[in-house]
Length: 85
Image (tube, rainbow, N blue to C red; front, side, top):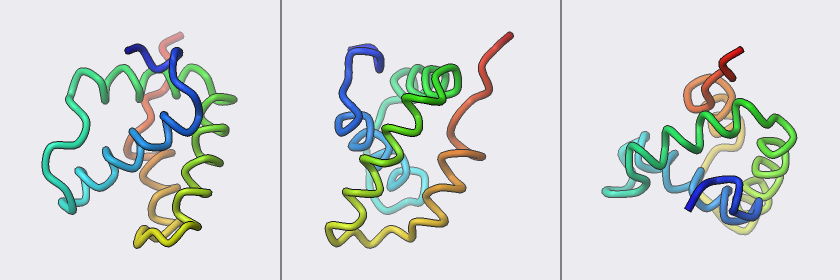
């Protein structure tokens, strides 16, 4: 399913899985093709990225072991791809 068809909560779940995968906390996670589509889509749609980030923050507030500052840096700098012009 393409990221445009997902709700902010579903996007947040994917981001959480990709983050945990990148940090070595989980095996499997999100496939490389799906990661690329998600990173590109969020890079071209900052409003959707903001909604997904807000949903992910809510998930983290429910007792996650993720440090919010590190997750925000990862999302903005390490994960999301700039939109091609």
